[in-house]
Image (cartoon, rainbow, N blue to C red; front, side, top):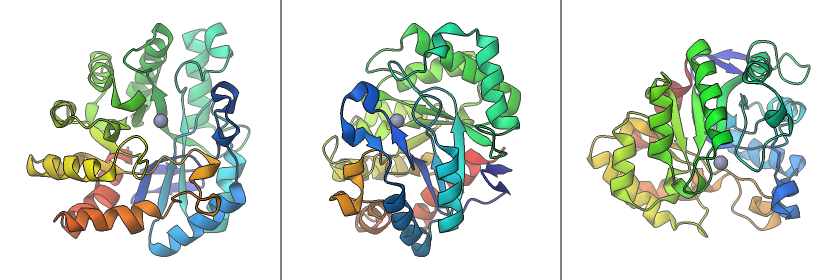
Length: 299
Ligand SMILES: [Zn+2]
């Protein structure tokens, strides 16, 4: 079963696995562009996306990132998309103050309420434990504490864990920790791996059995899409096609089409054709968009 904010489904259909309908990281980033709150424009773009055949969006905005369950409910109602919500904590320095003040037991109780009762006074429940992050080339003690806490909730509830790696780093370390704490790596999506261009690294991560997030598609300032396509193609040749999932991770006002950005349709309308051009079959692409997300999300 997959719990969306409006009920339960068993098949998520074509899915964008790592997005934010609304997110505010401007407090620390000191950049008003990172206060992403253009809900009207987002709704409009997502309506088009739904029309094109996308059925589900996983919103990985959690506590401290400006998660807005009312906005998610509104987008879901207007567009008809399935929206899946998340709970957890991101990474330093984007953590709410209470993380440093409350005990593990208190924090676990808060996260379980999001999953079992509903988020912020609604009956809309979280399904994903994410995006739980680590810093660039390091995992801080607090980040490790939160990863452990998330592992405990995973072991208790079976909910999938979505991680955030900073520029693709620390994926192996994340997996090692999660495994030691009893997490089923087949229920883990390591996020932003497509920001690494090192095929060998991808293969080592893939060997753990986790899902690989090619979830910053179109962010060309970090990585050309040609590199993403090449690595996906190599991963398929080595039998890892059942572990790849796709998304764009739009987080800034300037990412929206009307604001001059690539918009949510980029993955579907621009990136998928690049995969086909590379010789990847429609059947494999369906795996990335439908079967793989479905397997990862179902509990
Ligand atoms: Zn992220």
